[in-house]
Amino acid sequence: MTADETIARVLAHKDVLGITRVANLTGLDRTGVLVVMVCRPNARSSAVFNGKGVDIAAAKANHKVWVNLETGIYHKGGRWYGKTKNGKFISVDDAKKAGYKAAKRD
Image 1 (tube, rainbow, N blue to C red):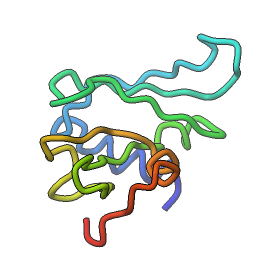
Image 2 (image 1 turned 180 degrees about the vertical axis):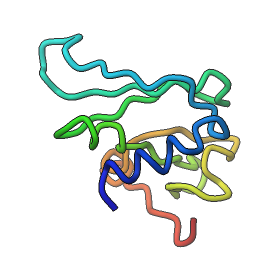
Image 3 (image 1 turned 135 degrees about the horizontal axis):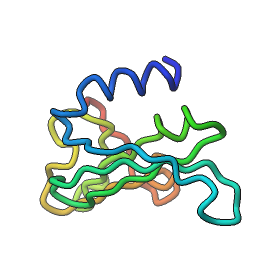
């Protein structure tokens, strides 16, 4: 699935997901990294999520995984995504570098 297809699928459900804004933040610093921000004001944890990528579509499609800090398992979606008591949202790369393992089923 392309980044544009991912964006279209997510934005089709933005009201259910609680997404109120998607903003391009590129150019607000000097690094030149393409950055997109998504606002979810009613989220249980962080209300703002940032995605980075080689182009704007990739930055928009870059999402975070939910790490259950008690089990060391990260979820890309599904039943436990953002739902465990002790967890956090991080990128897949950061989860792998920290030694967290992907859930077998999501």
